[in-house]
Image 1 (cartoon, rainbow, N blue to C red):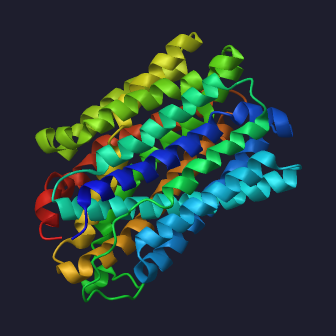
Image 2: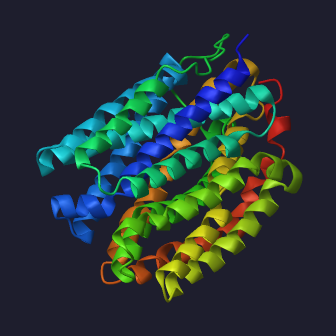
Amino acid sequence: MTDLPRARLAIAAAFLVQGLVFISLTTRLPRIQERWDLGELALSGVLLMMVLLAGVGSLVAERLAPRLDSAVVLRAGLLVVAGSVVVLVLAPSLAVFVLGLAAYGVGLGIVDATGNMQAVALEHRMGRVVLPSCHGAWTLGGVIGAVLTLATTDVPWSAIALVAVLPLLASVAPYLPRDHGVAATSTAIPTSADGDVPWRAIVMVGLALVVFYTVDTAAATWGPVYLDDVFDAPEGLVALATLPYLVATGLVRLVGDRLTERVGAVRLLRVGAAIALVALVVVVAAPSWPVAVLGFTLLGCGVAVVAPLSFSAAAALAGRDADPATRQARVDAVVARFNQFNYVGALLGAVMTGVVGAGSLRVGFAVPLVLVVALFWLARAFAPADDVVDVSAGA
């Protein structure tokens, strides 16, 4: 019998470490720009490469998890993240930095996909909503990463490589092993034509995930640059664009399990969309950097639960009507494929915000402002998340 409480702590630790490392890097983008003399377009190109390779990493996880178990692949991904962080931080040249960032992108995709596979499997075995709090652990890690950035603005750049110790430690945690039973080991994903996986409904949920990551990546990646370029905020405080956003996101996610069970996914998402819309208007129209920080904080409250509820809904749809022996193998494969929506959103958030906002990042933040309106319509696709416990019973 698997020790579910220990597995839950291990999975939360993987999410926390992933968030800490990612935000530790993105909140230092102004410093990276200065170190390698990168303009907005050049930085957008580097981020595009990382996002595309993260998609490759997710596909690697899709192929390997059914054969090796998502716990094994997650450990491998954490090791890739640890090694790549050392390389990109200690890089003696731009070419080596780019190679390190490329490897980090692959590791990022592997950990993203397998971390969500583990969280979905845990949710199914426990028979209750847990994905929001798992994603809350990612956000807590991001908060720690942003605080570290604020506290270490004067430390030597090479010292940042010490962050790599954390994914190394997380790689030995007791993750949730798959109860293989008589499950198939094929990596093929059934198509909707076979009546097994309702891809049309899953794509609708995936579009909401695209919107979320467009908003989230724009805030995390371009928020510090926005405060630095548009408002000339004090250099040591530019990470404040990310920190309050993450704190607000984390607080909502930590209570997101209960909120979802009480309010329902559809209503919760529509209320959040309204808050996010107001928040982005505040960001775009802000007359000063403190007002912009307020906008980012409200934004975190508004979009907090979109990602975890997206994975819950997709997994519920993928596993519906499947017998317990085949459910997890199918859900693992679908979650990895579904994770690609993450990188479409990250592409729009990281690259389009920079490209559209090359002249002014106020204009760049209009990209997520327009897209967040779609959440009002897309929320109806989350009805399966309202009864995820019933769908996953017996997993």
